[in-house]
Image (cartoon, rainbow, N blue to C red; front, side, top):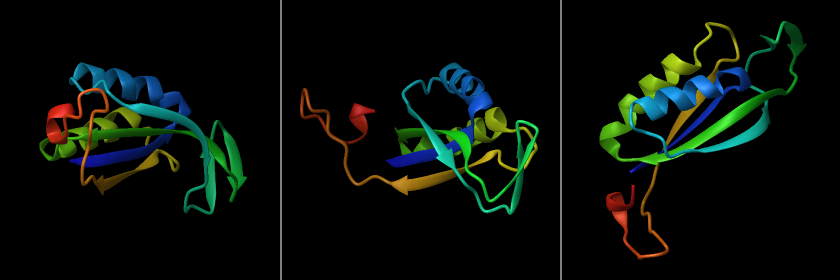
Length: 110
């Protein structure tokens, strides 16, 4: 299992959600956050900023290893604007997952 964390533009979150749902990956967590990337200058919402925090949405999901590439492709396509500040994706190994209600574990709970 892998945890996928993505930071995307606020205006792209509905595109991301709809694309994930259309591909059968509806389970995710979203957070509204403030993010500063590595670029010295960013242009978002037609505002030039220098080392400033910009609003983003953090998307998290835990998926089976076989779905990671598909998830990455969906995120890259649905969150893309072609501008600096489109976001980043991080893939993190998950050692174990347990459903509290039934104590099932592993991939079966996904």
